[in-house]
Length: 338
Image (cartoon, rainbow, N blue to C red; front, top):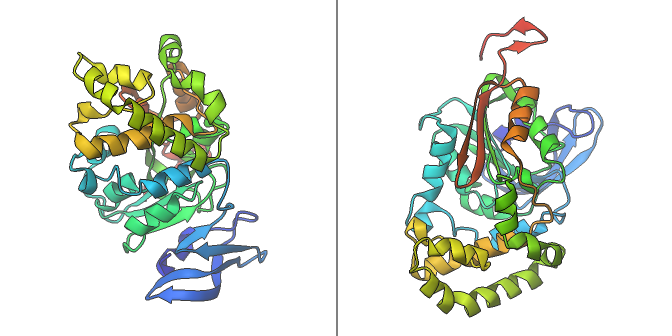
C-alpha cells in the first residue's frame, strides 16, 4: 500500500485512525510487509504482499481467491482483446470517463478487471475483496499511485464513512451470506449526493428452474476449490467438442450454459481464449458458498430503505442493475456537496 493512502483506513474496533507501527519491507513509498496499529486502542492489522488485511486470508470466499489467482488476467480487456470490462463498467455506472479529484470505492474487486477501468478515470480508487483475489488485483493494479487495494469484509469495512464520491459493486452481492445487509452497508460510505451503482443476479421462477447449476451446486459448493477446479477443467475438456457443435445452433451458447459449459462466444471470443473463459466461469457457477439471486421488487425495496434519490433499476445480461444517489441531507439538515 502507498503511505499516502493511510488516512483512508480506520480501525475495525473503534473507528479511529491507523498508523504504520512496523515496516518490514518497503519499495519506495509502498509498504509491502508491515503492521498497522490503531492510534486509540492499539489493535493491529497486517500488511502482506502490499495489501492491508482486515480479515483472514482464507475464508468462505476462498474459491474466488483460487479462481482469480489462476485467471488473474483472463477478463482484462488488454488480455482478452475485447472490451467487455470497459463496456460493462461505463454501461452500468453511466459515469463520465474523467473523475480526477474524486474518490471511488469498489466493493468486491475479484482480480481487478473493473479496478483498472475505474483507475483509468484518474480518480483515487479504493478497491477491496473478501477473498485473497486481492493478491491478483495488487499484481495488476497495486503499484498505481491512485489505487489502494485492501482485503476486507463488506459487513465491517475499514474505511472512513461518508468520504467517497462514488461506489460500485459488481458481481458480489449474491455471493454474500446476507445480500440485503451487504447492500445496506454501501450507502454509508458515500458523501451526500454520492453516486452508487450495484448489480445482483436476477431471480425468476423459470430462470431458476432452468439453471442447471442450482441442481449441481449442493454437491460442489463445499468442495475444496482445488478439487472442484480440476473437475471443472476435465468436464469442459470432455464437453468441448460437443459444445462446438451446439454453438452452431441458434442461441446454441445458451444450451451450452445449461450443460455447465460457460460459453462466451456471443462476445466474439474464440479459440483458446473462449475456452479459458469457459474454465473460469464454469468454476464460478459452481464454487461460491452462497448464490442468492434477487427479485426486482426486493432491489426496489433496498433502494427505498436506503432513501436513494433518482434511483434507476434495469435488467441487463448480468442481472439487475441499480443506480442511485444518496440524499443531500444528514439528520434532516441540508448538506453542501464536497
